[in-house]
Amino acid sequence: MKKVYLFLLIIYTVGLSACKTDEAVIPSNLQNPALIGKWYLQDLTTRIQTTGNGNNSDITIPYSGFGNYDFFEFKIRNEATYSSAFTGKAYEGYYSTNTNIIAPRPIFFKSGNFELDFSIQSLTSTTMVLFRSSSVEQGGVTTTTTNTYTYTH
Image (cartoon, rainbow, N blue to C red; front, side, top):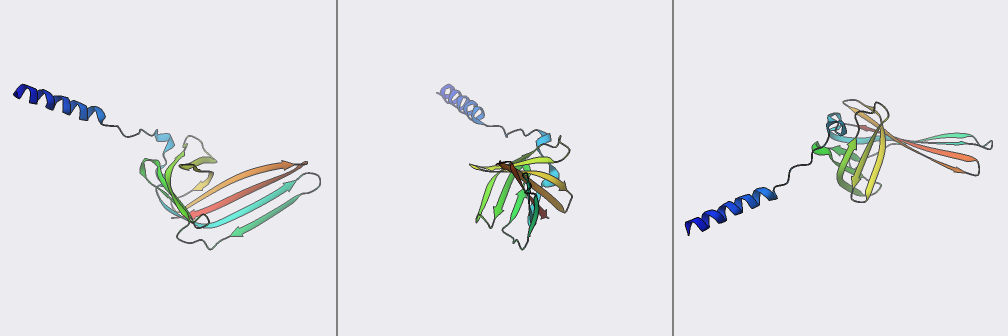
């Protein structure tokens, strides 16, 4: 009977160790320790440039007055929180950025179906500047919109 219990104990121990999952290994070039911490949105500048068919314009619209609900928080293991008063939500997810790319360095955030992508324009110990740009061409006129986000620790 003791042999049966010993055998069951060995099977149980082996079973538990087989069920153990290892933590995900994130390549070091997809991590950026300089990002770790909570970054609050201070300024947003929208620039709209239109070119083509003689319709050239360049408009810059500044926004400010953001609160404590507008932030990015980067944590270890590439975990992150994005919070926006505009959406009224905080999203828990993951980020990645490739430190092998000099500039502008892309940064991606994903939380379920919610995804954001930016480029890091500059990053110091106190200020992070992100931007995203998109263009639309219609009838020979190209409109490019660039949003620049300034965050501080």
